[in-house]
Image (cartoon, rainbow, N blue to C red; front, top):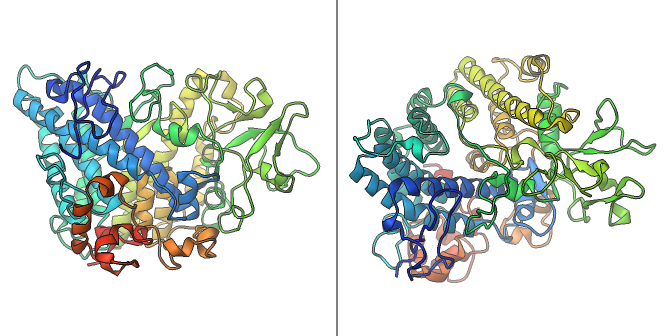
Length: 617
């Protein structure tokens, strides 16, 4: 049998996915056609669904290393928030979902599309393959590539640098195929493409943005051609010139909140809503941090609030009292208060905080289960409501569904109907600003930097307008109000500074704000070696810096989260090949551990080992 056994696609639209339930099941399900029997246009929606979901699911987990949001409780996100590197991550999700649900589809989709002259489907197959493998390398460092879907029962591992080179070739082929005219009789891309509606120009621009993103990952390398895995400023700028030029060019996955009976067979949740809702929006005990609040309310010490502050920081219904913290922001009518930020540089988690807030319906007040933590009511969950899965009447989440006074606003990016961003103009702008800053073109960098911030603001405004149209009940909540031109201009002209005083730190911090819960946040942190002068108002969490518990065992002071440990599927079923690739991984044998040649992959400090692009030449 092959390690990455082919899942069998039953109903093949995105609203009717089916598969074998066992990851390693080698039997054929007589009630479902195999992938070999499935048409190329039928393979596309499920591939899109799983690629979008897995990228966002692992991305949000990885983003908690970077400190804009935190979570309390025994969860993947808590371990990332506190840098407890022996805690679980979402490695199994990343490996299983890509290899089984996307990886097993792109090859037959490509081959069948090419045979039919359906070049646009073939191009997307190549794009998804490259995007998925880059994600795997960025997470794990080394994964099976050449033998992953061949005849090998247990595929050999390949190093990240080798895979990156191949993925650059894959994305170039994707662009070339998407640029072709399809053969007569080929199914139109619009018949199956639910991301871009068959718009090949958007797909091509998305490919160029992804290619620029991956080339920019090589920023620690010396100057040269990206084909040799060097840092290629000219090639990055050339790709960006062919990528998104406005928000109208974005590749965005639109979601619904219908709570249909159609569920995917790995996540087992309705397939129509935002994957970030599954991991963030529907869950409690996730909070904005003091780092994020400071950057949104006092960027660069200018004392000018970012108009996005009310969209990224959650609000709750509340009533002022004589003991109300004077630093809390309230609406003018005194009915909503905004969360304070959790200061991760203090021992708040070690001191049992922040405690989850509860609602006393009789007394109409918020409280916590611990008398000693009553002040934790100043922290508001990012939890979101909705009309489908949550079964509410609007986007608010209520601690007690029947009590309006217990409402929470949530935040804009993690609601059931918030869009997923595959490739955005905002990201293109920030990459361009970084590259131009490196080249010494501060004027060009400043223009790109401002354009990135403005693109982020405009996207949020457009989304909020849709919500206000649909739900009149949200009109008085600052999360849903429109950001006015006066507010926007005051922030851009006052807080962002000028070309003369532009710094790399301002660029990277604004990029971090504009792309919440995105895996690129962690990639950027690694590229800049967690430099506190680059990421403004940020510092490593107290749990790490003070060696709480056995944290230094897994991440000694001076080291940082650099990769994830391999998913259990690999060391359970493919151990010999995992051991063998260690000889080609710089630093693997320098990790602490007994018999390190055979156990490098399970060293207690494996997550501090840089992936290939995270090392200088």
